[in-house]
Image (tube, rainbow, N blue to C red; front, side):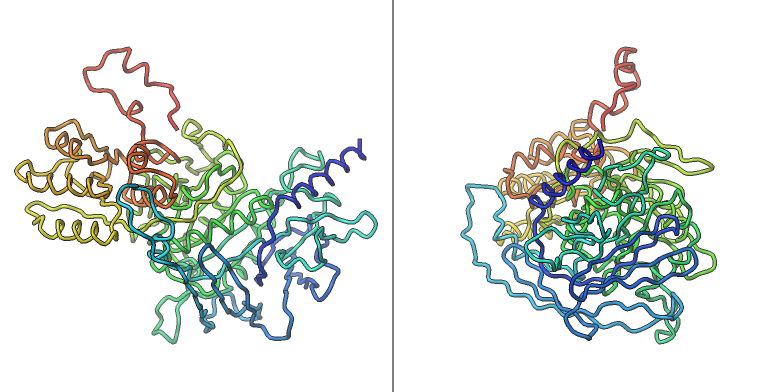
Length: 567
């Protein structure tokens, strides 16, 4: 049985080696926190790639550095379609300074060569031209993490050292290899021992900055500023991570830190690609970032990650981790716990005392600890003495391999109408946007269930002209809870007749990210995009048949909607 098991493992390694793609050279600095009972041996035995081991109490920290010179600066080349990006950055080094001591960082310089050709305009096909989309996309502000564990790693029987299966011995796509203590062979997601029926989970933490990483900066008159390396240093001292039931934690900090308001679709795509690069080697993922645009980033990743079969939990804090009283510690610990559970396998946001579906979340408060809420859907889980999950809200399991959709069309405009508005400026934006193709979707936040003044007939004609010119017009509600009902009033029926699409009960974050995702795919026609806006792809919208029946509905109508699963 052992020989058969060994042969199956080796065959799995060979298959993984054939399927994995060799990525470009990257240099990164990774922290791995492991309890002393599960610390194993790791590292490569070729070249200068030797791991450094540093023990602090019950925590063993492995650092693996790759460089061809003694300088701390490193260079790598990241390639994407139609672009060549060369980025130079400085690797974050461990030091003896306190975790939240404010230090200066070296800025990242980026050089971009874009040799795209101007495509020919085609008014007959209403599909997105991917070459045209390149003109409206920007580059990520931070460098990618890349794969943090090698794809083609097996262990030698005799010496218990890792052997890299490949054309050469220097696998530059591997940042760090750690041998688990429970077995000589490690194949991700395959349990190799019985013991108590569980295996040690591994969670990857991707930190982009935010309030959680901040501390008062004396050079800025005490204003809060992010401190690089502080979170990883703090996590080494967290006793909660030494508990046997807690997962192994691998923390990666992007360099440099940015405010969440500076991060956009290019940075969200970077997170999605890093999750895919490490997908087979971790049981879950935690993303630390600022709260200002967390709902947008988490919603975008829910659409970018198709067939996601593992939890991706976003979290942050309202109070920095450096303060004596803060909400950062609990948010971080609970995010790690939910990321190591296999019951809610989707993109979510944990904050305060609840786990919320990412594409249903919105920020509702800037001063209280409950900063996020889900207006039209109950939380996926709440914490108290125990964790109470709403199992009936769980999404169905993934039906295929993980796919990444990193292109998002950002030519979107959202307008919140006020009584007595002048539609001349809206007409000007629509006409100019249609002429220059700089506007692809218009989101209108209307009154109530999707109403506009009935006396503004010219405005409805304007929206009809926008639809005829290839612009998607989407109607949402200004109400915090509730849904758009286009056919409930006469004005709503007029909008529906003009080709306006209903957003139902989606949040503004979900509407903007969903239409950007659908337009960025490049394989959908105009009518297909409009139809999919009302279809639940990631649980972002409530189907019409799941809405509450009218007050005078029959017993059959009420009973037929109870107990059904719509997500």
